[in-house]
Length: 301
Image 1 (cartoon, rainbow, N blue to C red):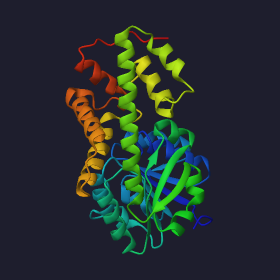
Image 2 (image 1 turned 180 degrees about the vertical axis):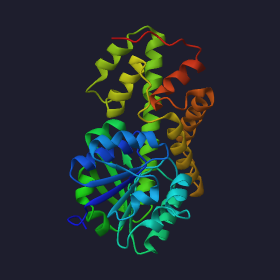
Image 3 (image 1 turned 30 degrees about the horizontal axis):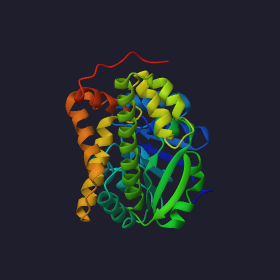
């Protein structure tokens, strides 16, 4: 499959998918793209990407179809609906669902796809917009290991892939990732809220903690966003709460209580309910300030 992949369709070219489509085109693949909001796909035409009028049109004739849509229901509708993507795909083509979706949805889509003579992987990603732009995404792939290996050249354009188990395992790994990300962002926001109230300089506190045990990619990137007051979305809060809620629902279906995750989910839901769902998920610090009746400070340097 790897050497025979020439044509790739990217379904969903928002914050992440647009960068991914661009990287694939830059690597020499023939890329077709579709997005529900057409202007988000149209900007890719300058990079040699063919913008399609429908998802099915983009998928027709593609060797690999990458799905980067916003939710499980949207994926099911666009991929499996009448006249949708799967019906348009040629025999033996590969569908790679890189969206963050429920485990059950990933398994269901996989069953439908394999039954039509296609190969399938659920391969969600972590790394945010920066990772999508730079090709440094962590890719968590579920499905048949040989099918994942056959797509090595495609995945290499986007980041580092790890096969994590059968279909559905990629979605499950992403839920674990999202619990860690959301919880850590909240912990960073709490720490910076504490130092703001205590009178220290948050920017200098962040600098002091770099390289210590509290350091992490999240601390560096999202801590800086919080200090600077930059909440332009890389990962919108409304998608973060979608993922934490999905993770908790799956945990409960397995008889698990995840108390930290439950509180984090509650905080993000409050952020969305207060009208900040389109802000970056690092904007959770704004929710903590609301809770504590604390005005946003001037950006520190």
